[in-house]
Every structure is written in C-alpha cells, then in structure tokens.
Image (cartoon, rainbow over all chains, first blue to last red; front, side):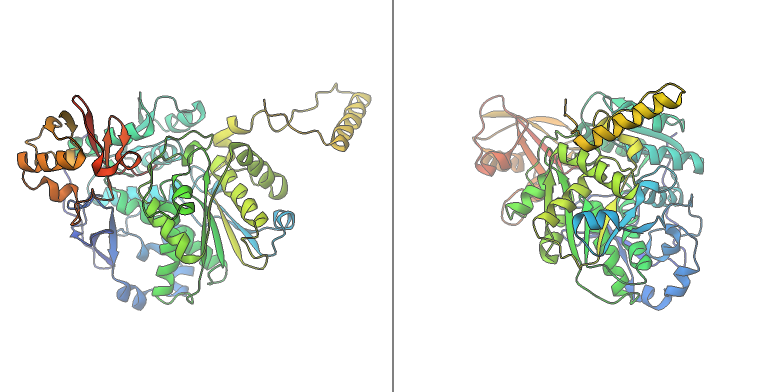
Length: 434
Length: 91
C-alpha cells in the first residue's frame, strides 16, 4: 500500500505555484509537506491573484457545479479530475425564531450539519485533500482524527476508490467508530490521546509515504475551508456579512474563512468591508480564548476536558493567527461551560429545527453569551457557522431532553398523558443535570 | 546535569538519526548551547535570532511545557527528560 510520490502535474489553468511558510516566507515545491524546514511554521498554498482576477467572474461561478468545486480556481488542484461528491453549497438559513429569542434582527445560520456526504464541514477539506492526493500519486490516504475527519476521509476515499487507513484514539465514542468503519477503511485505534495519535501519524507519513489529509497534505486540505467563506458571500448576494461566529479547534477553519473573504475582495468579486470575527471554545479546552483574554501572542497548551471532543485541541497550531484575526477585526473569542453547550444544542433545535453536535452547541452558546454581553449589534448581519450534525454526539444530550410519554393504544390513555404533559409544561420542569 | 533529550524526526538529520540522546546543562539555555556543540547547526533550527525557541516548537521538561515554567531559564537536574515537539495541528 506504499506509494512513491510522482512529480505534480502542473496543468495550465492552475493559479497556484508554490508552498510558502506563513511565518518566515520560505518557499517550497508543491508536494506533500506541511512544515517549514527552517522554522517549523505552517506551509500555505501561494496563489497568483492577478491571474484569478482576470479569469474569475460571478457568472462563471454561478454556472459552476452546485458544490465547492464551483470555486475550483481558488482551490489547490491542478487538473479537472476532482472528487465531487456534492460537498458544499449547504443552506444559509435566515433565522427568525432564534434571532427573536436573542434580540437580533439579521441572523443567518450556515448549516454544515447537512453537508454531504458525512454531515460535517470536514467533507470540504477532505474533498480537496483527496483530489490533490490523487494528483500527487498517492494511492493510500489517511488521517489522525477524533471523529468527523475520520468519517469523512473513510467515506470520500471509498467513493474515490483510494485505500484508506484511519488513526483514532482508542477511547473514541462508539458512534464515531461505527461512522468510520462502515466505509471499510483500516482503522487503527491508538492507545493514547489525540496528540500522541497525531505525532505517531507524522512518523507514519515520513516512513510509509501515505497521504495524511491533516498532516502532510495539510496545506491543500485547509484550503477547503475557504469555501465556507465563499459560499456565504455568494449566498448573501455577493456581499460580505458584518460579523461571523465560528468554533475554534486548531484555529484553521476560522483563519480560512477570513482568507476566503479576503480572496473574494482581492479578485474583485465582492466589495471590501470590515467583517468582525468572533470565535467559540469550550471552557474545558480554551487555550485560544485564554490567549485572547490575556492579550498574548502565544498559546499556552492545555489538557482538554470537555464534552466538545471535536474541538478539544489542547495545542492548536493556528491559535495565534485566530487571536490575531479576532483582535484586528474587533471580534471576541469566548468560552462556555459544558452545561451551556448542551443548552446551545437544545436552543438551536427548539427554535430553528437544526440538530447540531457539541461544536455547534458551543458556537450557539457563545453567540448567546456575546449578545447578552452587548457585544453584537442587533442590526449587524451576523452569520453563525454550524459545523456538524447532532446525530454524531448523541451521548452529549442524552438525559437532558426529556422522555417520551408512553401510552396504551386508547383514546383515554392518550388524553391523560396529554393533560400530564401540559401540566409539566405549565410547571416548567427543569432538566436536572445528573 | 545529565539529561535525556527526545528529538523529533524533523531534526534527526542533525543528530545522526538518534531520536533520544544524552546531553547536559543546568538549565534549558545551557542545554541548547550544549546541543549546538555536539550537533553544529541545530541551534539555528531550534531558536530564532533572539535565541528564543521558535514559536512553532514546544519544549517540555518532564512533560511540562517550559512556557509554564521558567522558559529558557527553566532549571534542569540529573535524569530530567527534555522533549522537543513541533506544534500539533488538529483534525
């Protein structure tokens, strides 16, 4: 299953030419590498924006596929042979009931809980990474994951006919394990925490020549998140919002949404505008929120302890960039308790009919916290990013959402139960956190 | 003080492919000098122009990040284990 990497195919219409270190600017060839050899900073894809400005138009995008690939010129793939499983172009929902509940007049929800094919935003980054992996000649692809990424990589690799090996911590929830195993990858359950899994995967990438979507293919992978910025701009009628609220794990999603908006402005697709960037973390793993609060330009790593496992990165590599963006755009990075996260999941479900996982609950809870602290103008066009589906973290809400009323198949049994349920509502029973 | 140093793959070309080695120093700053003497050129990879460890490198003494301790002044004693770990990205 090992694969020698062949020279990348430099097709004529690719607007990207090199990998560049975000810290020191050193440039490298467009192969599978993610860390600067000189300063260990992260490598990013470098684009030719002049070429993009001349070739991209709103009409061409609108005429493109109904997926992330309508933005192909902005994505680091050199050929037309992309893996398109219909990922992206998820609904941008105008919120009414949640907005009213919070006292906001222009709230939108970007709903990646229904993204294809595995119901999280990860399908975007994986589609890009695997398309590029195939171009670079990899036949085995892989990832280190605590959940959504594993599901996505296994699914899209299956669709593309690529061999797949997924690495997870051995104590991952059963649902996430099942949600990866079903696609028949090789699943390595590592006896260790996520950091240890990630470190092991770096070694495997070096020695076995596999394409790890979030390690050696990371510069290509991370570009997929820009589509969450592109789509919102297009769906708002080719306009940027005033304020966005997004969850923070490694910080990559946050920084790439910002980059997406910037690129659209740079090539003239939308008018430039200040957009405030606010971020959401769980208190049990909030190194970025703490750095923001304490005005530091470095992250102090923490040991995660929260139900929001999908965003529990104790040492986030893009954390410093996220703090920088929040500060310079006038946003806020806040954290919320596990109890608030559960309330956030319930609030979104009860007001908008959207069932999100713990990361989404964190984002909604932080949105609420910022509104209550007077940090969101009711008339700002605010977009909240919901990144994954609630069916993936059912354990988190079990016990907090009540029980069915069990009745006999008789009218009087039903009527007694109905009366009981109305009484319970009137008494405003509160869930007791056991 | 004799300490054990764990070196990441990215730097093993400096250390003759050793992932674990013995070095010495009474604190981190001295340890870095000592490593440079044994493996010339390694310090420029570990530290920036101001002699501070690079932002995307983490140094741990017995599993504690030195940023929580005394930075490069963090004292070392016999038998301590120092790990050099590049920043981890999420998934």
